[in-house]
Length: 80
Image (tube, rainbow, N blue to C red; front, side):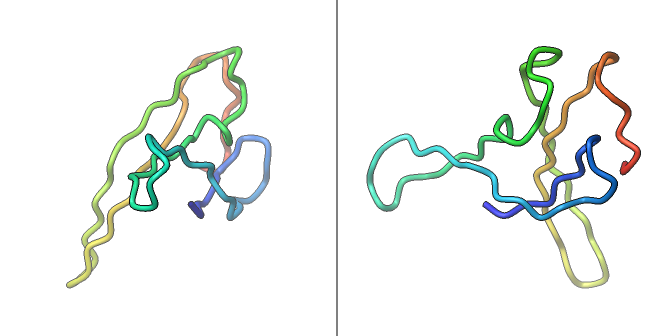
């Protein structure tokens, strides 16, 4: 899955590829993203939050799935 990563370690967002997982080996199996593969500081906060965002712009509707970590000991992300 191609995604945009806003990392606290970088000065600009980057296009990256997120790993996915399948529950079975069939060709039509549903795939699930693994955001832990991209987000750092697993020792500080091992789990990842997610939320769905719907954006209405004129006649168009866009949906995004946002993955993030939130902890007082994580570095401040100046990109957000």
